Length: 187
Image 1 (cartoon, one colour):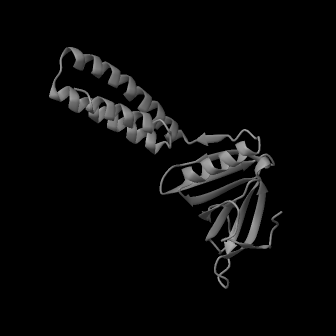
Image 2 (cartoon, rainbow, N blue to C red):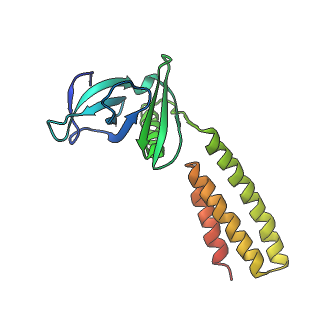
Image 3 (cartoon, rainbow, N blue to C red):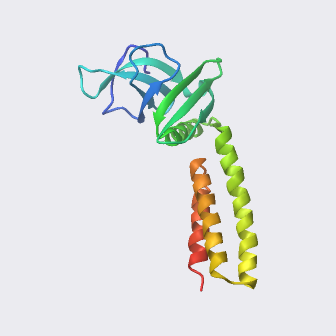
């Protein structure tokens, strides 16, 4: 069991490590490493004197996690809300991957991992779903009146749907890509 102030070997750690910067910390040491084990989230500080080692700063049980909110981007914001009422915010590289990793670890523990999407992500998903509905109308028009302009419009709408699903970190972006490929492979 990992506890605060312990030294931890990052190379042999069983889990996943993510570089982060705490956003609600007043500590001068900004660079941190979030480690996710099979049952804990560990905030650690890299040890500048020992390569591959870190000092444990905080430890939180995955079972105590209430929800995860994140914004997508190369460096997204992760908000971890615990059942105790504590809330932690981090700027994390690949925030969507981090949230998915935690969710999967929680599911492996038998806990319903709840990842909450941001308002902008939900807006992107809604918009992408509307665009997919629009593609059905365009396909119907194309089957009656085939034209290059309709092909171009349909591909543009599908591309926009793919981008919006991707921006929201929604796995349906792959379905939208397949629709583009399917439409372009038609005779």
